[in-house]
Amino acid sequence: MSETELRELLEGAGHKLTPPRSEVLRLLADRTGTFTAAELQTALAATAPEIGRATVFRTLDLLIDLGALERVRLPSGQEGYVLCHPHHHHHVVCSSCGRIGEVESRVLEGVLRTAVEDSGFVLQAHTFELSGVCSPCREEQGPAAEPTQI
Image 1: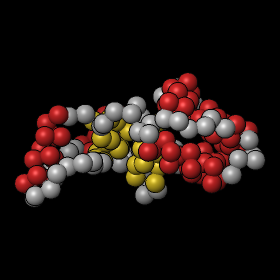
Image 2: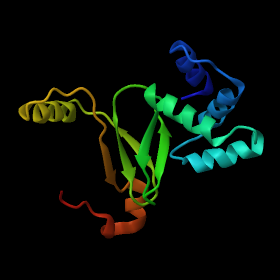
Image 3: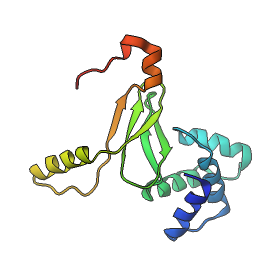
């Protein structure tokens, strides 16, 4: 998402666009792929050292609530983040390089809904994260990266 889209999303949801929050949005919009809160904080220290960790985490949490950011588990085991457009989708994370792909599937959604309803519940929300090996890493690793059966 662009900085303008992030600003419009926050303002449209009735949130103030403070100078520190604006700086966080500016840095987020420049990100491609995954990042950690520590990486974001390090980048902020170079341009706006007065912005504290609490502001960073509050802004990240707010963007998660608004659907513009999602938490993902990185191959290192760390918690990371990825910018997203606020529509429902799932992520597949490369267990080798950490590349993120978005997965949208009506079939998957239908199967999940049916499975939950069969257990006597009504599905209200869910997150689903898949792990795999991306095409560039498979090419680099050769036959060792062949799919495994679940």
